[in-house]
Amino acid sequence: MKNSDKLDTFIIEEKIVKVNGDIASRFYTRGKELGKGGFAKVYEVTNNETKEIYAAKVVQKSSLTKGRTRQKLMTEIKIHRSVHNKGIVNFEHFFEDSENIYILLEICNNGNLNEKLKRRRRLTELEAQCYLMQLYSIIRYLHSLKIVHRDIKLSNLLINESMELKLGDFGLATKIEFEGERKRTMCGTPNYIAPEILDSRVGHSYEVDIWSFGIVAYTMLVGKPPFQAEDARNTYKRIQGNKYSFPEATPISPEARDLIGSILQTNPSSRLTLDQIIDHPFLNKNTIPRTLPISTLCVPPSNTYLKHFEGQQDCKKNEEFIPMSPKMETSSFSFKQNLSPREIVRSPKNVPQSKLYICVSGLKPETDDIWVEKWVDYSEKYGLGYKLSNGAVGAHFNDLSKIVYLFNQRIQYYDSKQANEEPNEFLITEHPPELQKKITILQHFNKHLKVEKFPFEGPSPYIKKWVSNNVATIFRLSNRSVHIVFHDKVELLIQGQSKSIVFLENNVQSSYSATQIAESGNQELIKRMRFTKEILTGMVQK
Image (tube, rainbow, N blue to C red; front, side, top):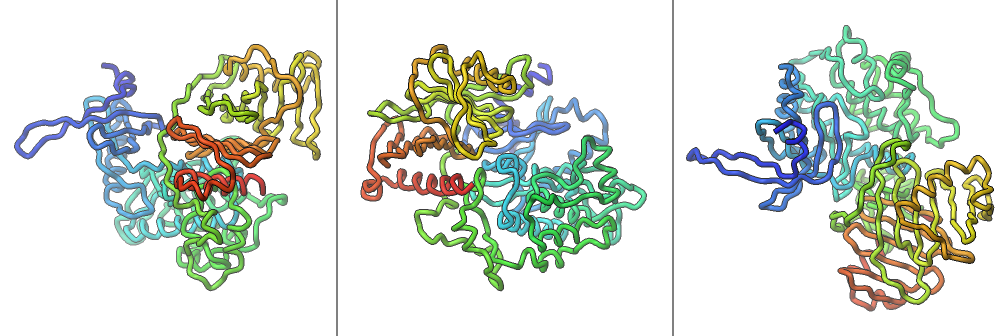
């Protein structure tokens, strides 16, 4: 069997040698791809016997032809399996067959900070404080074991179901063997690499993780790394020249600027130490929550949440947030993470390759209810295409502009740059030239939605805002109705006018008025409504 065939199989077999010498087999089912690097791919795998789910790092042996490459992998395994801390992705065990080496790790279902930043563009200072406090504890633990990670970056900072930060990928980690030892291996990720690594004559040690701490802080608050350039070579030049600045249009507190500036020092000995970081005013000017609400994966924390922590000095760091109202509590929610079936379609030849998801609602018609009946998620590249239950179709683009398809080949275009929400209306054959690309994308969406005719006439609501995270996809329509599709096939439809609620669970649909929810005794409905309220608060404020 070829290497590529072996890697693509859905069943993985682990051979286990018993004490008496007998050989038993343990089987895993391979799921979706979670990520990939230079020599490995990471998949979700399920133990067929225990049903436990892991993240499996799969390395093809054919990629380890050089002795040094295999030795690096063995060093990664040795270091990772030796660390045990709640802030580090747990190392389960590893095994191999004739083709691959499999490293089983703790799975973190809420993605990583890089994915979160892409959805959010930049984070609030309270969120940055929360993550930096956790990262500080992780680095202190590793350095106490004389381990330097050397690849601390947003994509290696994962978030588990409890919204706790976990550091993964020990592929570049090293052990300091004696006091004062300086490593000279050129390694790291261009945007995060420390200047002393670029100059191998100097050598490097623990301070490179401190440098990465500063890069992470800047990136979360600004939205991109400080030394980012058009290519790695120019990025390295900027790092060596320490050429970075804070954007004038981005509000960043003096304390945050000082922390970052005091860390991003070219001379390693001039950087803040871990003890100085924990005592810095940026991490002491207010109470910092231990973890953040799950809604922050896709929308900013609500003002109510932020105000709870503002100006509370001399308080214990990492204090748990006690909501002002139990209805706002969402950080402890634990929804099933099994994604509902979605058809994945590859983009056409003339469009850059990325995934396109086609999703269908399970709601059934009720009176004048309007919800999102079917949608195409192509936000990885362009945006969202959709069909409403009243027959209207449209698109919500990544630049926040919108198009609604009307009868008689007419379209309404909502420009995100306009202060008002009045649409511009055109015949599809007579639209302005600058809309040609968006019209083409809309037609591409309609092809996958299988929309050929547009029987809808008259004004229609449209999708005004939408967000998606690892728990649900949330649509807010222009008529103030809200449709929430949880990834475990539960759905909520909140009518903007009547305030009635349609609840779909286990293919059973029921309706409630707003006053009936608390009296219904349906704890699942109440829990989902609390989650929805937190999400909507963030959407409206944003």
